[in-house]
Amino acid sequence: MVSHPSTEVNSSLAEDSPVGDFPLVFLVSVLFCGVTAVWGMVNPLQMSGVALAATSFLLKNLDWFFLLMCTFLLILSVSLAFGKYSHLKLGGDDEEPEFSTISWLAMLFSAGMGCGLLFWGVAEPMFHFMDPPNMEGRTPEAARFAMVLTNFHWGFHAWGIYALSALVLAYFGFRKKKPYLCSTPIRETFSGKYIDSICHATDVIAVLSVVFGVAGSLAMGVLQVCSGLNAVFHVSTDSIPVYMGVLGLITVAFMISASTSLDKGIKILSNLNMMVASFLLLFVIFAGPARFILEIFVNTLGDYAASLPKLSFHLYPYEGLQGWSASWTLTYLIWWVAWGPFVGIFIARISRGRTIRQFMIGVIFLPTIFSILWFSAFGGAGLYIEIFGGGGFGELVREDVTKALFALFEYYPMSMVLSSLALFSIFVFLVTSADSATFVLGMMTSHGALNPSTKRKLTWGVIISLLAASTLFVGGVEVPKAIAISGAIPFSVILLLQIVAFFRTLRKEDIPSK
Image (cartoon, rainbow, N blue to C red; front, side, top):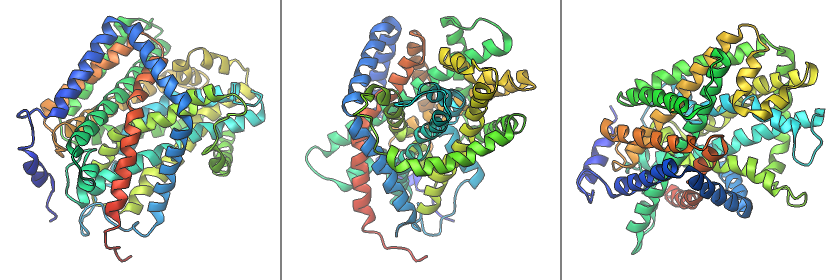
């Protein structure tokens, strides 16, 4: 039996904590998050103004850097999947995967973007169809481009960022038996007078990136749940007390799940939710315009593959559309970077025993194909209604993006059942994402422990919920989006340092025989 590395990692670090059982990273991160949460509740307009102004300025002035970086990460990921190190195992050479492939895919997908697909599955293709960049809207060309652009935002680039973030940590954690911390690749590769300070700063920035990314996404999820409750039960939900009630219910649920082990709470909920999401997907396809949707799927596969090289380097400088690019493409890419430390550590944690090729195919290619099918179904159904139906659906979506999914179900039989299942799925996706985040934050603030204490996880659960609550006081989705991506901007530099450290260490490996 292969020995579990957690014991030796944790014991070797037990004495490194500068404040007993409370590492410096934990204390600094909690203090910063607490101040931000109080600021958001006392003066939400001021906090939202600062967040929106800062992210808008950086996205517009550093758009070239972020697009190049994310495209570079995708190229590196693909080269690793099929390069000379592709048969290297993330763990011992005789180690087997901890989780089955189905459970592994379900967990990484639920943590990565499950709720986001439900939120934007109908809405984003409709937005781009109605108002595409540098093109006349509501045309067949706009419809094709809408599907390509949506999948560019949710496809290979997104999962390439996740994959490389996870691979670096899985390699150092399972292959090199080092702590599961974002600072580990830097600490193990570089040296110098200030390396300890740099590593502490790295871990703090990574923790804040996770906290703000998940809190912003949780707030957007609460808004969609409230819209769903309004659509299903026809009750008024547009108020702070209702938002707080829904957030409180989600918090209780993910706290209960967080108090269980990884192979119980997150695994069971992820498998259940993937079954519900798959049912919704198949129902939307085969109870709707099935032929149209499947034609869109095949069409989008080809269009996306053909357009990917161009879109990977396209910023619209001649057209004066930098604002559009910052609001859509760059916001998405930076959002994925913001979630990189969270999803990266979580995917790394559940991927022990897989080869680099298995890992990359599972993390990049399969979720991307599923995402294309998802948007073809939900976005395609919305496009069918707008183009061949009575129209008006696109304006409804633009008026309130949180209602898009539930408005679509009204065109289907059993709309009440579908909306109820969607509400359940959104709820569970939010629970699994927040549960996964508490697990990862527990690891990051417990010296990289593979199984952090329940107390530490629950502490982070409370902090995430407080931050989500502070953003909900403003209302709308723009402030949660800004909060979600704010932590990514400094972390992007850390990610590049991690990759340099990874390749410097990887070159010393003996290439395994195939």
